[in-house]
Amino acid sequence: MSVLEIPKRKVESKKGVLTKRRKRQLEWILILLIVLGYSVAIMAQSSGLNDLNYQAQSEFKPTIKDALKFSDVPEIVDTVKRIQNIKYGISSVPLFPKYQVQQISQAKLQNEPLGKLYHSLLKVGYGPIYNMPYGEFWIGNTRSRENNYGAHLKHFSSTAHLDGVGYGGYSDNEINVFGKQFYKKHTLFGDFNYDRNVIHYYGYDTNLNKLENNYIKQRYQVFEPKVRLVSHYTDSARINHDITLSYYNLQNLNREAENNIKLKAFGSTFINKEKLDVNLTTDFYNHKQANDTLNDLIVSLNPSFEAGGNKWHADIGLTGTLDNFKNKTRFYFFPKLNVFYNVYENMIIPYAGVNGGLIKNSFRSLSRENVFVDTTIKYTNTNNKYNAFIGLRGNLSSKTSYDAKVSYAQYDSLQFFVINYSGINQVYNRFSVVYDNTTLLTVSGQLKFQLKEKLNLIARGNYYLYKTKNLTRAYQKPDFDLTFSGIYNLDSKIIIKADIFIVGQQWAQTQITDNNGVITLGPKQLNGWVDANLGAEYRYSKMLSFFVQANNIANQRYYRWDRYPSQRFNFMFGVTFVPF
Image 1 (cartoon, rainbow, N blue to C red):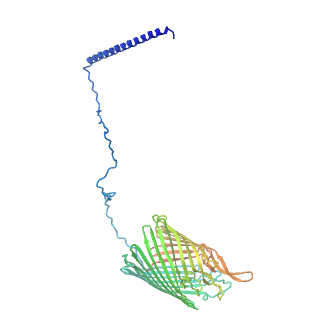
Image 2: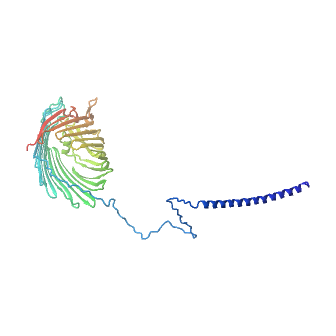
Image 3: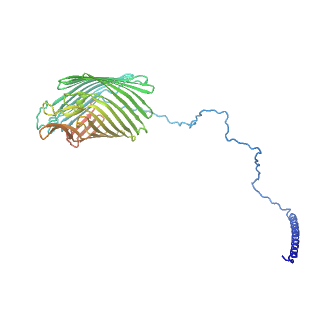
C-alpha cells in the first residue's frame, strides 16, 4: 500500500454520509405534500356532494354467527347413551290394520236336478268271424239313503277252431248279486258270485292227433259268498274297522276241488298324531285232488304306524306270518316301509319303500293265470322275502301326471309254467307248475294325460329281468310289456277307444332231439307280439246306443302260451239299451 491511498478513502466516506441525509429530507417533504393534497381533496368533495343520496334495495340481511369457543377445561363426550326403564317384549303390528272388506252381491243358488237313474241296462253283441255271442245285463235299485242292491249277469263264448290245432271253443259266464245296507255309523255289504268257465286244451297238432272235443274239455265252477262290515266313525279316538268274511268252492270236471275260508280284519285309530293300523288275515285252504288231500292254514298279522306332515308321509310296520302246510309249521317276518316327500307342489314326489309277504299258490290263482294248467298241481307257496323299490311321481301340469319306479325283489319258490311232457296221453297240451328261487329287477313307468272328460290317454310299461337259480330260463315270463290306451269323447255322442299291447319275447321249455335220437328238454324262444284293438260307440239317445269293436287289427297269430296260438283279426258289433 502507498502513502497516497489513505487520504483518498477519507474523502469518499464524507461524500457518502451527505447523500443519506439528503434522501431522508426529501422523503419527509414528499409525505407532507401527499397528506396535504388528500385533505384538500376530501374537503372539496364534501362541499359539493352533500345533497346526493343513494339507496340500494336488497333482501340480504347480514347476520353474524355466534362464536363457538372451545372450553378451557377438556371434556370427554360419550356417544353411547344409556336408556332408562328398558322393557323387553314383542309388539305385533298388523300389515294392513285398516283393511276394508268390499261387499259383494248375494249369490243365488238354484236347485240342480240330479241325473235320472234307470233300473236296468242290457248290452248284446255278436262276432261273426269266430261265432262269438256276447250279452251283459245289469239291474238294480235307484238312489236310496237306506240301501243299494242289484245284480250283474254276463255271457261271452266262441266256437273257434283255429288252423293246425284242436277245437278252441270257450265260454265265460258270470252271475253277481250284491246288496248294501246303510246305517248311522256302519255299512253292511253282501255279495254272491258264481263263475262258470269252459275251455278246451286245443294246443296240439291236429296232423298228429285227432281228439274228440269232450276229451280236451275242462270246466271251472266257483261259488263265492261274501259279507263285509265297514265303520264310518268321525271321532279319531274311535277304532274304525273293516271286517270281511268270505268263502269259495272251486270245482272242475275231474272232481278236483278247492275250498277256502278267509277272514280279513282291519282296524285303525290315532295315538296322539300318529295313526295305528292293524291288519289280521286268516286263510284256510283245502285242496282235494284225485290222489291226495292237502290243507293249508295261513295267519298274518301286520301292525304299522302312519305319520306325516305338510310335505311328507311315512308308513312303517312289520308283518308276521304263520304257515301250517303239509304238516309243517313255518314262521316268516317281513318288513314294511313306505315313505314319500312332496318336494314342490305335487310336481316332484320321490318315494321309496320295502315290503314282502307269503304268496299263496292255490288252484284258483294258478288256473286264472294260465287256464291251460294241468289240474293235478304241485302246490308250493311263494315266499317274497323282500321287495325294495324307489320311484318318482308327480304332476307335470293340471292335465298330465307321471310315475316311474325301480324295484328289486327276491323270491323263494316262484312259479313258472312248462309243458307237461311226462303225460301218458303224449298230446303235450297241458302245463305243469315248477318252482325256483328267483331274483327280479323291474323297471316300470306310467304317463297319463286327461283333458276333462273329452280325452284320456295312458301309457305304461314294464321291463323284467329274471335270474333263476336252477331253471335255464324264466319260462313263460315276457321280457317287457307296453300298453297304450286312449278314450276320446265327442260331446258324449261318439266315443272312440283304442288299445295297443306290445309284449316282448319269452322262453318256453320244449323237447330237443340230438343226432343220436336222445330226447332232452331245453329252452326255445317265443317271439314278441303286438295286438291293437279299436272300438267306437254312437249314443243315439240316453237309452239307446250302438257299438263296434275290432280286435287284433294287425291280424297276427302270436303265442302267449306255448302251443296255443291266438285268434287273428275279429270284430264284434252290438247295441246297448235300457229296457226299464
